[in-house]
Image (cartoon, rainbow, N blue to C red; front, side, top):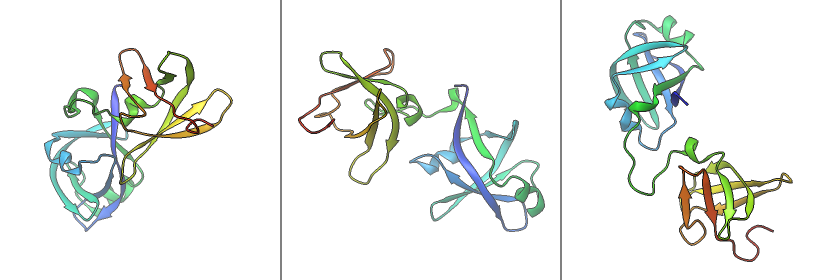
Length: 164
């Protein structure tokens, strides 16, 4: 995956070409660190960033009026993978987790990670079994003792009823 989605343009803000962006990150302040973003197959230098509630207000070079900004509505913003922020130990990007093989502690195949649901208490990993059933597993060490991106495996320690 060369380009990583960081947000979606939801519309124009004001009359000078500012874009209202819904961020796909838990740290919207990260937008201040970006020199440029990709939108619609074109790279745009970022000229200003500010925030309003849960939205990022972004100004891109070359988009100077409301009409130009409105044309961008619905476009995803992406960055090159090499510009992703460094993660702390035991932190993962959601897109790296989706598709991992889920196995039990003995290595027996359970299914695949099909989604990550972000909750206030903790994230939930959605595991889809080969028969199409979906199970939600809390993203805590007691249930997920190991994640290996290198091997493409998430180890699950099931308790009775967790995968029923």
